[in-house]
Length: 216
Image (cartoon, rainbow, N blue to C red):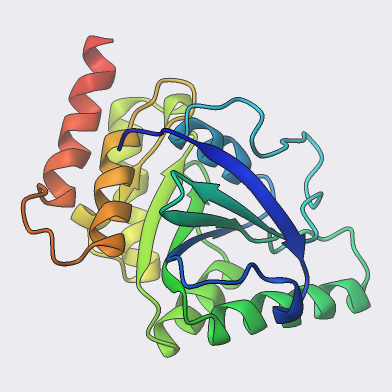
């Protein structure tokens, strides 16, 4: 995917605040501190499009970004951060569920998991919730550079089994080395334009991402 432009549009907490128009949207979600903002920045080749922080739980709004004037990325607040009040957790849940269940522009959700961590109950609940609403999921395992190749394979299998993902459909990703960037764009592009049958399968790109890292 050639990125011509990537710009922040607006933030919001409810449908009244969402951008108007029918541009397709790709939403990104994951537990706090999984590298969601860094992943989006890497995909669009910008360091500061999405603000990053070492403090989990900083994203408390739904943030919309225009990509190439053709579609939008939507950065959803991270879930599972313990150091917030019960009322804040409830507000976040309502905000996220309202967007996911009612946004007709939504084409898919990129569900991000730290490859070093086994999924917990919150991850399973999110996966089941997306399945219940029939929302297509692109599973992405971030921070892959922090594990050896053998451990990456092992953890990919564990996470696939724990959450019921098809292993070959999982994108193994590293912001640092760019592993998985092509595979992620292949998966996203297929959801934005399902009629394009010329793109390679995700599994082939996943393997290519492993090879690219070893030769970089």
